[in-house]
Length: 64
Image (cartoon, rainbow, N blue to C red; front, top):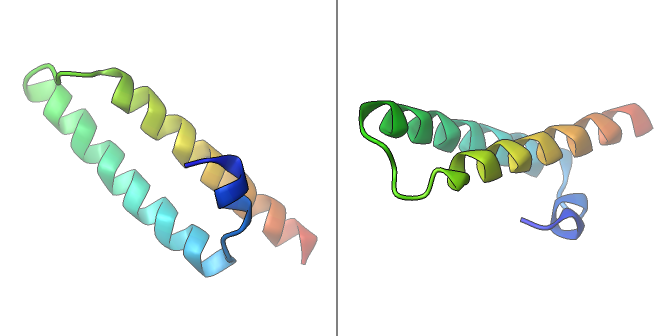
């Protein structure tokens, strides 16, 4: 997900995306702990996306 797409989301959409991304990250971590996943860079990518979403949510909260 690109930063321009993230900036276009509303606060409610951001909260929903954060929930789904954190669930996905948790599933990736569990899958990787049981047996190595094919592409471990997906974990790093999911963490970065989650951080971008949280940063934009905080920025919108401060702007209010």
